[in-house]
Length: 150
Length: 210
Image (cartoon, rainbow over all chains, first blue to last red; front, side):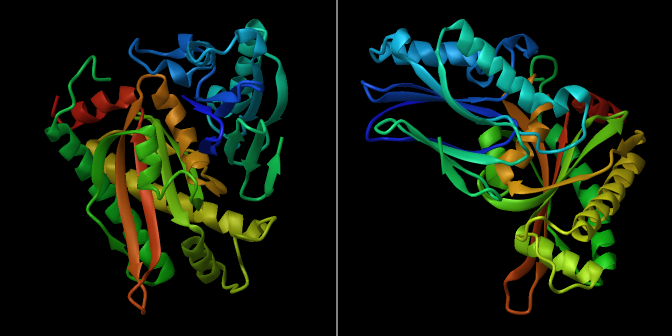
């Protein structure tokens, strides 16, 4: 979990079933990036786990981090990418972890009234993503499908 | 996992021995398949963060052919056989006798995918049967699945189960290598065995170190 001011950018590489969540403020040119691994903190079986890896606790902490930088929650917008299904088997829970992460992220963003401006989710490819707070463009690179911006 | 039993150096040594025996058998199978001598390094067993896990395989963004399978039975966990694309190409070209084959081409020809999965089957089978003989535990692999993509995207799939318990994972990493004629290694791969946290205790008990 990280926050950057323009001209610095935010980046996370090799997203598979994980979801990269970018929260940003267009006018202040500040953005935060979160790497969600599991949908719900109630799945944690130890109380000392990193809150940032769950959709619910992670998005909330990231919002708090941005608030500390002077961002108003109402001016926040979101872009999300990831949540793919890398392999076609596994226990039914594990195999759907990508889509479940995406659903959980959307639910939490809706709960916090943060609009999703763009998304590139699902499929079966890994993604490396980079967000530029200046232009608010999210650049997504995949191995087989090239690079795009959303 | 640390809450119940402390993992000591002795425990890690036991896991190293498991990696040693398993990977030695797998490397022998691979040598026979390819009629080439495949070198195996002493396994490394470490407790690492998820990011460090990706670094072991060359960094989250490195493009690899990764075979993934789950272990079931008395033990549960994930196993990966990770090869850089160039090594995977060499393997498969030799196995199917087609010099044109290339994992960089999309879509990847079916023949190559199933040959690679078969390779995963054979290697994991020899790794796990050695592990099973050594520990007396019944273990069997699922059907292997192949993905050609970034290391981070592939390996993180095996970390999901662990991530419910911990932000760190015990990885039994065995590097295999074949010395090419020009001194560069022409094959450079990894076997990763990631036991699920509840299986640590089963392993230690079976070997009488708990």
